[in-house]
Figure 1 (cartoon, rainbow, N blue to C red):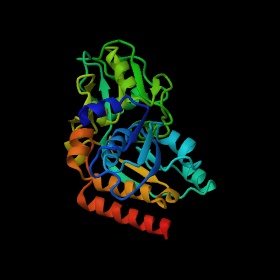
Figure 2 (cartoon, rainbow, N blue to C red; figure 1 turned 90 degrees about the horizontal axis):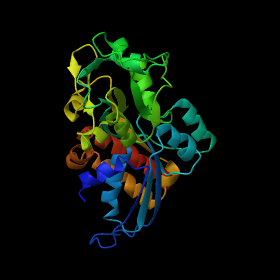
Figure 3 (cartoon, rainbow, N blue to C red; figure 1 turned 90 degrees about the vertical axis):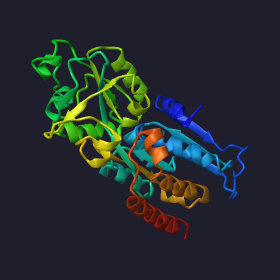
Figure 4 (cartoon, rainbow, N blue to C red; figure 1 turned 180 degrees about the horizontal axis):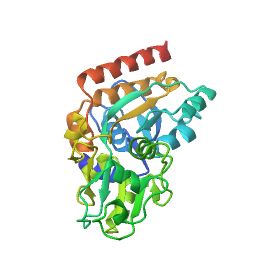
Length: 318
C-alpha cells in the first residue's frame, strides 16, 4: 500500500495505532521506547497519521495511538483531563478549554502544523451549482437555515437541501460558525453530524441535493467522490486548492491547523523526539502537500515553531 492509499483509509478511520517496524535498519537508533497517545481533530488526523508512520519506521520501540475525536472532544474528554500527550486541533484552543486544562494542571504549547482549505462539497450530479457566496453558504448552515435550494438562489431547483457536516465537538464546526455564519447566527441542527469525513462524503454522494463540508485532505485524496464548490467572498469564485490556500485567495475558509503537546509529556524523551520530528516534517512538500493535501509551513515558520518547541522541551526536562 502506498502512503497515498493509506491516507485514503485514514480519512475514514476513527483511530489508528502506529507501531515501529522491527525490520527497519535504522530502527530504535537512539533506544527510544514508550507509548504516545494523541486525540483531537479529524482534519489534522491524516497529517499526524502520516508523520507518525514515518517516525515509527525509525523507532521500533515507540507505539503511537491516534484517535479522531474532534478538536473540542479531544480537549474536553482526553487532553485537558490529562489522558493524552497531544491534542490535534483545526482551530485555536478556547478559553473554557484553557481553564479546564489549568484546573487539571495540564500545561501545553501550541504548534502550527499546516494550512488547510476547508472544502464545501455537493453531489457530482448537482450541475445547478458550482459556486456559492459566503452569504448563500451561511443561509444553508445558520441556525434558522433555508430548507430548499431555490431559497438560496432563485434559479436553483425547488428541492430540499440535505446537509452533512462536522459534529459540534469539531474544530471545523466551530470555524465554520465563526467565519461563515457568524457566532450570532449559530449552526443548524437540521443536518447529519459526524467526525468522519468519509461519512460526510458518502452522504453527499448519495443525494443529488446534498451539501457537506470537511478539511481539504479528504477531498484531495478522494476527488471523484463528490464535487468541490468555489467560494465567492467578494472577489469572484475561488476553488479550494493548495495554491489558493497558500496564496491567501481562498477566504475565509483557508485556516491554520495545530497540535498541542503537553509539557509533562515533553519531559519524556520519546515524546520530545516525536514532537521534534513532527515539526521537522511540516515543511516536507511531498508528505504534507502531495500525499496528505495541506499547505506545508514556510522555512521561517518552521524555524519559529522549532524554537518554541525546544524552549518547551528544555523547560520540561530541566
